[in-house]
Image (cartoon, rainbow, N blue to C red; front, side):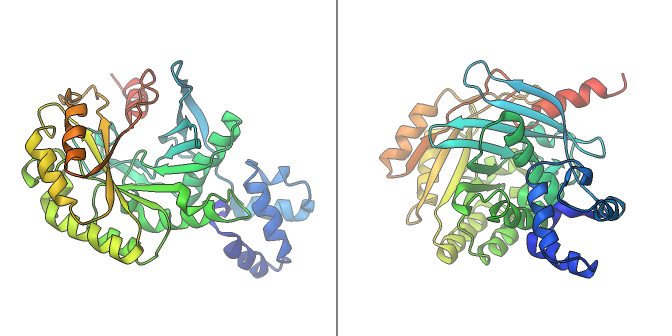
Length: 343
């Protein structure tokens, strides 16, 4: 069976020609898919014979809302979607003055093992398909009834660990006949897969690359982020420099503030040294507590910010949204997994 929503319009057009169908049918189907139809029967401007043919050869992905939580504080909505195979992923809808943002997942689970993240606790189950990534944007928009203008690939999973799928997803959401969301409105977060960062740079995309740094020294970073044990901070920062030189795009560095782990003055100074001479900005993230983790939120966010700014670093502190609805990525899925596990 053909995963029809994972194809670009150009690929769909070629496929229809192979099936002996006129090219314009591809555009009709493409438009229906991006209106969120769940079956070919809903495509009313196609002949009955063609609808039957498509239903026998193709399938349309559509997630089901397994759980939905809305913050009473700021209107943030967190979705737990159940996929066609019964696995679940999370998507978060956030309102900002500049428009609505959706934070989406790229994998079911994650194998990166970061100590502060709930998404990785049970490991990686599988990669998502391009259609399953698109669905998170499309169905969040349909369910909320509000347009989405910005996408963040910072949900469950490591996007660059599912590289080809993510690249196809970007083509799909960027397509003017589809969701038509510009690359400058898309952020991609990585824990630092250096070979994939180099590969991404060659595409010259206008998206924002966010690197989850979280510590400026190898000893600390290796403790909380296993990926660092095979790479190292220096190699990662050299890769970031190459990325900037190749693309001209400023990198955002994510830094979760963890009490007594990565929030000392000397670490702020070392972070400033790492960024010297390279345009970029640091996004300090007040840590969301994870039940299974002993790590606690830092009490030194303001002092850390001030020290970086004194060294000439551009710093923002991420606005905390959805604090009353399992805000930390992976927590809602984790809770659902516990409820359904055999006692």
